[in-house]
Length: 128
Image 1 (spheres, rainbow, N blue to C red):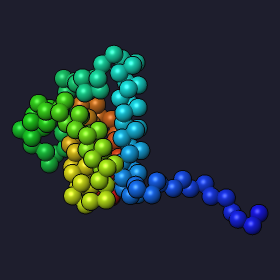
Image 2: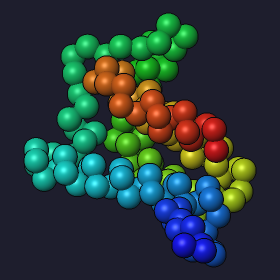
Image 3: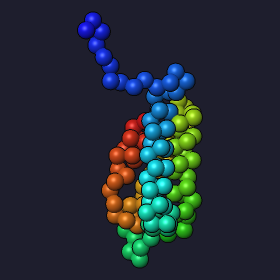
Image 4: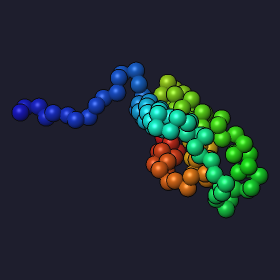
């Protein structure tokens, strides 16, 4: 027992710590979306529709309407942004872009579903 065993999984030498997190998050998002598609036969963005849409008090109705009209593009931008983070997460500008896309996704998704499951992703994206 001269050497303690380590349970820490190291990133490949070419991956920055930020990139590793984005790659794991991208994998989780794609798995979640694949499960949704398999179980319902529909894409997640088409399931996030309702006749009542909530909004934070600081967001205008016009801005929310704009978000709703671009819901599909916002949802599809999430994996693209996470992939960009996985390949270039060492750059602050890329991390800012990912945080902005995650924010738009979170706002769009939670305004339709009132679900709070994306908050950890949102907070972590901004912490990066």
